[in-house]
Image (cartoon, rainbow, N blue to C red; front, side, top):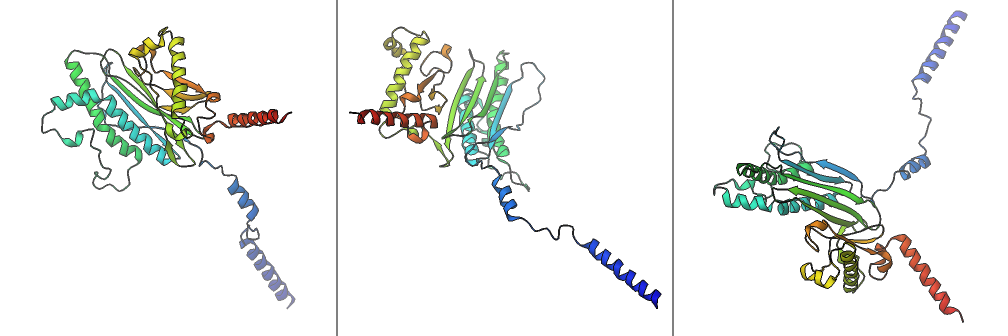
Length: 332
């Protein structure tokens, strides 16, 4: 009888050990809402930042091992702000149309009438043309389809130049770059360069500014205070006169403007020193000056730019100056 009791007791103890071992180790641990909330708050807010990188378009380029093979290279921007990417994609297509106007005109004059119209650069290729496609196309794939006709024109130009005995290597490069990733305005510059067989190549820099709070692209007129366009134009004209003399382009600015008239550029960005006005080749000067730019310091723009687009440090300084001026006026 005693032996049976001992056996029964051992069985109960063994069962208890087994049941304890089967319990989940963290069953008695309750989630700490404070820790969960802290972890969520540690995730940085990037909604007012422009973060991303470049991705090269995959295009149908024939193999070539010659030292003068044509070089066609286009990159797009992939960021955390999709509307910025879309704006830059459209700008790339517009720039390609400008850069390849020579070859496009040649193709129009020399292509047979029954040329496949789907190859024309002006016609966008819809993303749904691939039959049996299971996964949606990425923005890079869609843009690559739209860029391909321009590449075809570029290659046709290279073929015709070589038939004419021109052995120079033709090139075309487009790549965007994030210039300002935060602040009142974020800025992307679209760099482009090409050599299409002429006397010299061509380069361009176009700036795109975005207000991330408003989720929209911003033009020069959008950052100006009310009725300040003429004031900005006067400031820019003065900067132009200084640039002409500093660049030793002419001693008499009035005479210089008979050939290269001043104009207010709408290609701009907010730099560290002030408002940067970017000009294209041949826009306000000969080819030798490259891509001219005028800088208007923020000190001259306190009443011209909207306050939200002035650098914070400058806004603080102007408030301090206003306060000092009022104090001086209050003194007997």
